[in-house]
Image (cartoon, helix red, strand yellow):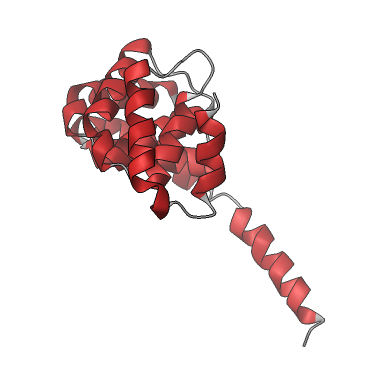
Length: 167
């Protein structure tokens, strides 16, 4: 029984990492292009997150559309949607336009009192992307929020937070 466990696990790892059929991804991306004007903040954040999670670069037209829609909907973004969007752009190696970064940062300042430790760590990690420096107001607010929720940090988000506060 022990001899088959590594083989099964190795097979599971390999199949888990395989990307879905390119035709399916292409069809889903085409549909996202068609309906992106109807996306709400959660849809925007989830779409960006999905591309970053599977490591596929989205079509430039889709990124432009999602960026424009995000700017329109930004006042409705909650802390998790801000953190996930910033994380996705950074993970994809995409440099969001300056207007979106400025507005996401401003919205992050507005909602930072509601951020949980994971979202704080994720957002600060993403804001350390090349070419963007978090505003003093954001860093000061995040530092205060970290102090408020420090007891809630777990082994997963504690190191990330520590490193981000050093930059």
